[in-house]
Image (tube, rainbow, N blue to C red; front, side, top):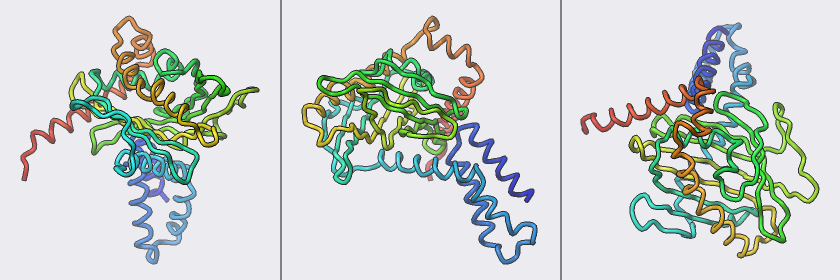
Length: 307
């Protein structure tokens, strides 16, 4: 049992540093070790496997791992995309789109290189109550709670075109250190209920969008250059969404996300973001360490001799 507690504590420590994939590997490795020596365990250690898979850490991490894996597979998916915007040169915006055949949802995949530091981008994404200052068609964003060091929930309200009813969305997001890729992933998905969050009801006349899954992937390239990707699968809650609505979403929202994000991330020392960084120095120091560790790994990989 002492071994189980040591593994669970190691897992908690890794989660505090947004190393959810490493934490899941830690739990799975211990699980496999218990399985391999199941017949030789002492009477005291036999309940370990059941306690492990029933532990809050295992249950929560399994859910996160499944979400993270799905988002990463969506970034890697090369099939059946419709090209909306093609890059004219390396780093220009690329927008891909497809309608899911078995769902009433649509998937968008954006890729671009932004001329801003990764740290600044992380700050703009983390400060959820400021989304209305840069995110296209967002009129209000209301934080609903912070569930972990890198985990937040937020309600986002959108301005839409007539005759559609006002849309909102409640999203849970968490940051992930993609250690092997020298990148940060922010995974997002809608939530309709949660044990630790009071999910507000929709107001009369409003319709709640549903993001099945989505995420930002931010990869350090240079000090002032970041490769950005965004993927999201959204149900707009419009039966047989007309082409007019999809064109509006692409023109007025999708194609402007990275442009607005880049502009917001070019903040200076007098900005509201700089003030938030100062007031939440412990968190942002942790973000800075994660990014610096990624930079060092990238530099080390370049310096390592190729065999």
